Length: 306
Image (cartoon, rainbow, N blue to C red):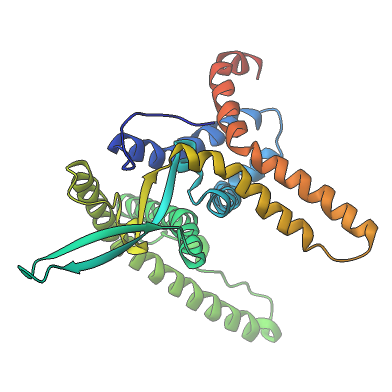
């Protein structure tokens, strides 16, 4: 399943890169909304919504790892027929005028680049989401403290002391002191995050905007600072590469099946499990996009039903 935005040559257009970058956020919003609607009739889904950051990060970890391993592209980039290529700059000098011409050479991704790509695609957005949550929580606490005063701020976190006799008084006091220290340390960490996060967020957004503007003006081949740090260009896949991707996946899976060890019955069980995993991963991209599209179309009916 490929979405073609247009353009010629191996360099993707700005709109292709922007669409590929925004797809995970749109997918997460659609999945969260879908689970929220179904949770009205299935209360156990609220547990998934309580840990939506971890659930989505785990889902994207599986999808991104599989996509980078088989197609050298992220989950969203593979939907648009894009591939990641390592950048190697070859310096050439002419002996006549001593001018240097730099030639860019693209090659396949190495293992450490794939691992780093997963970290930039999954782990960093997860950390950013958690920092954003802490920042909002601390800002709400400060706003509440400014409205209602500082006396009752975080009263529930500071602990309490009960009169249970002279024998247990020392134990309660020790636990209260330890709890107050942990609370104070946690409060200081949240205050530091609340102070630093706006600057970190502004710097990241500013760099991203600068790279996107330079990419739009064809002044750089890197769409984002993440790709520049990894030394990776995103290129449009050729027709031959798209045709060879299926044979490459078949070779990878054949080698994995050959490495199975154990008795015959254990190998048979492992083959069945691997086949189920392969089938799920093969249809994960199309299935997720189709499910979100189907849910959007049938949303009025579901709202009336639930």
